[in-house]
Image (cartoon, rainbow, N blue to C red; front, side):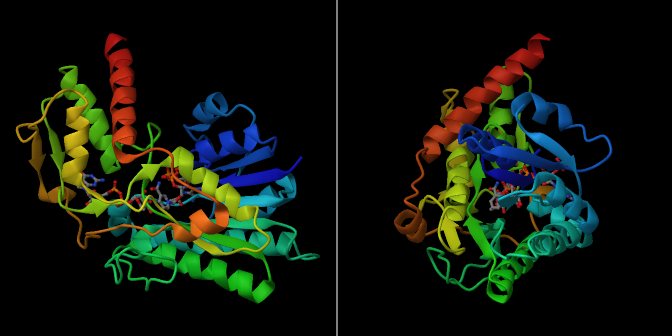
Length: 328
Ligand code: NDP
Ligand code: GDR
């Protein structure tokens, strides 16, 4: 039975990846931080087959202990401070976790695998945020990186460290440059879930309006359930490499609002949406659209869920969730 260690098990991708690996017969270990993490019970309920190990990406010795306990064949580093807006307010913490945390886990993998550098296969959750002020459209693996936030800068560090460990030590290390991916499990701070939840609450008479930032930014949005499949496929290749994972389509926040409000039969949402500078970012990533040709050709990966289906799925999920909460 293959064994996998996932950091970021309490997050959106950690849960989907754990489900995928359990369905493939893996023994799955999840790293959870903090002495009484409030998400521990949710993880136990959602993926009961996962064994939880305590550790933190900023604490190398805890990562070494987790490696010894899990004895993994594959390590998926999904842990990060991942909210871009928050990264300006907590730039040093973001650097420590999202940036230096990658070095810590790479080092833990290297030390654990001292007898054979290819004993453990490693996945790093890189991000389209690294393209920032985009230098090429669409963005591919070779596009020059130009990050626009402390989060993006930290991800660039992690990305190049992963490549460097592959080149320096011959490790099987891969970096997935994933574009935005969403789901009913998306954190409510991110724009898709903020919108799907607000639209559901407006439909149920629980909320009157939604206050947003920049409506003109464009993102290449896919479904998280599809994207974790690409992570796994990367680690099944003979060699580690870097791959863009995206749909190849881009949509503005306005189009997101069109589809989300459309799901409750509202075609003109202008009366429900306000803008406030507090949701604007000091530097914006205006346009992201990925070219997933390499992932398609080498990994045989294709996204299955399209933009409209994704947004509608999220609104329907939030309608159900908000109805249940309101009925309580
Ligand atoms: P989430 O924000 O949902 O999850 C982040 C995870 O990181 C949580 O489990 C969190 O744990 C954990 N974490 C935070 N700080 C630490 C720490 N100090 N030590 C260990 N773990 C920590 O992110 P997603 O699931 O959406 O994304 C997974 C990864 O992919 C992240 O690295 C993200 O940056 C990256 N990414 C995501 C994309 C997306 O569109 N979703 C696109 C491209 C990259 P806790 O619950 O305890 O806070
Ligand atoms: P992003 O996702 O920054 O792309 O990072 P987010 O959903 O936060 O923002 C997307 C775009 O929407 C605009 N926006 C708003 N965003 C939020 N959160 N709230 C608002 O009210 C709002 N109004 C407009 C933003 O300005 C932005 O342009 C996500 C994260 O998952 C990262 O970890 C990951 O690396 C990247 O996707 C790829």
